[in-house]
Image (cartoon, rainbow, N blue to C red):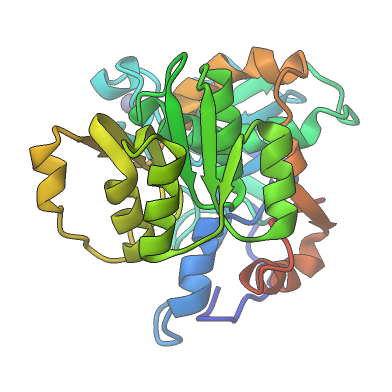
Length: 338
Ligand SMILES: [Zn+2]
């Protein structure tokens, strides 16, 4: 990505093993993330170009001498952050804060929107899957790299549980996965705040019981009406904008929790009500590496089908247009097949 609206396909050197803990993965599928759209809207042309993509699956091509959990030929999924799997934070299930971890792409590392990736800390990062490459489960397995785990993290941070009322703010792929997660964790009522008809239809399929398409004050009023005037126990903030964050903090009930997974685009001051009403505010980048193992059985058994968020498939050459399509809201989420 060279700047706002400027994504190019270029040839870069093939990745090689640099550390004994590395693996080389040949990418079989990847995707464009809603969070990729923030730099797509705002990146300055004067900044150095960066490699993009943090959601991918692939086949292990080579491993360093210290790698033990994956081998050449394995089909693997990678979480959106890499981690050693052994430091104190990894052991606590917070791999996004790994002491020896990091993020894909940028100016130094390979991104997932490319043919091959050097994976640091391969043992802690990659998860080998025992499915055929042509399995119908592949799109859903790919969402374990980010959006399904992120939706699950929002639900966890918002303390969704049996019988609770959950409100999901945002109808992008993460919000839709948040609906799946809220239902999976037992929410009784799931209110989606969104306004795109195709996304609303999918949200209903995933378990949303109520839809609120108003914005601002009107949305807050509508959620209050739907919750006996009290607000939701659990609010999943899946956008990251000022308005969506204010809405989230305004529709949570006293003693409730807001789980924020939308990448914050602006600082938002906390309203006094958040203190008065003992609201828990939590969230951050999801430790999806921890959640892959938790969510994988439900994906394998077909209990959840988060792969349905992909409504467009392209190839490597189609990536720039994939960004445009997602940015123009023509597509919910674009999958790239190699
Ligand atoms: Zn670690």
